[in-house]
Length: 134
Image 1 (tube, rainbow, N blue to C red):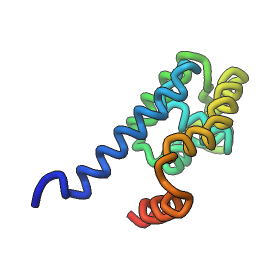
Image 2: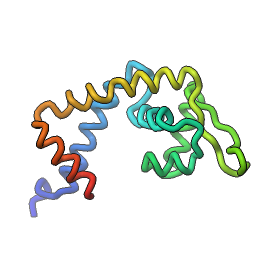
Image 3: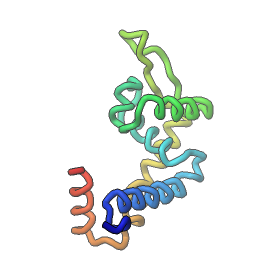
């Protein structure tokens, strides 16, 4: 098999391109693409345990901890003991974090349309469906 025919090559290439594109979109807000994604998940559900946030974002604990450290250092989130379980950590948006999350959230639809502009609506639906199956 030719390496360029390998599905992992295509998925990795597509993922890198998408990551760079989203990173460029959110760079004016002073966050990385992954940080913006985490902020958007917090906008959807704030004051969430770090364990639940890890599951929702599909990020392992170590990776998420590093991202949260950086977001906390730039005062976009705060962490505190989770109500009812002092061993767990609750992650909360700060006022500034909420503003940035709302700004990046408002960009998602436009960024999606722009990134997928070479695909028809039907192709976009098929792509999303196929990706969700793997």
